[in-house]
Image (cartoon, rainbow, N blue to C red; front, top):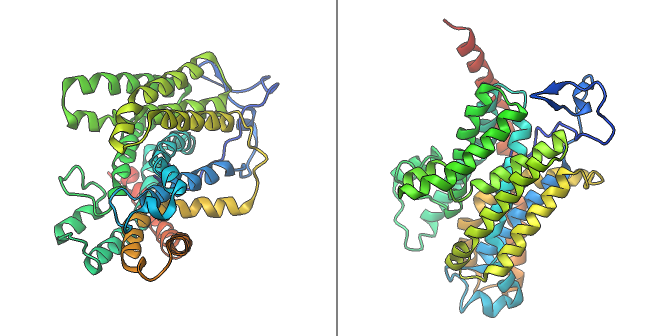
Length: 387
């Protein structure tokens, strides 16, 4: 989810939006006036804390979907009998993934601006892999301890450690990992643009080309080609990218049109998704529309008042929480539901998962990421200078 999962931690949110009246003597890029903040000398610019909060909200939606919505029947006699209305609402929590993808488009475009493709590669690797490797090992341990009919093979664990298991024909140890494949496709496609150098014109062209490809490629009937262009989800990333361009350069009809078209494509595809998830179409459409509206408000800087430091910590927990919640959470429910009341169990479980996510971020993700970043940056320098 990264994510998301955008950078998933929004660690490089360093660009302020264009403000009204800030147009004189601004540097230009592809004929588009750059924001006044580009002229500022030094200093770390404020990060968009609201995105951290939105990411945590999206993660909690997915957590609720898997642990309260419970589509696999781990709760006995049923989650609906225990949680009533909360269960019904939680069945729409899968849409948190769509919000992750919009945020990812916004944040990756922001964090990649002005970076080389090598820097972009390093930032993605150090952000995604440390917590993921740890989560894969934890998930494998849980599957061994609480098999639930799963025959775990060493090949599957090794394949999942690559994060490329879907391309290798290996099942995901945790079903939530499928979103990481979609995110990886986005990163690879966007890396091509980063290698050429991000410009306003180039990013707009990328949005247009990806949108057309995601509409045309499925017509050839190849699931593999559809996966390569993330055809079913590209509209969310494209909307997020266009929203970032609004945040950076200011709104115009072209960018709003890209967002509007992406929204229409997403809404058009929602009925089949709603049917697959056994939920009503109308609420899914309303929720996805609300995501776009909220992100538009972010792009227009309506949330500049969000400055609470704890939101950044909450955002940092999002990725580890997403990685561990499903397999671990369902195993805990399976083992403890006969010993604790449902409401006490789910409350304690989610609190425990949040604490575990913070511990993974603090003691696994951050130290490993620092070490990997140093090593990979040295490797990139050697790659550039060695003949």
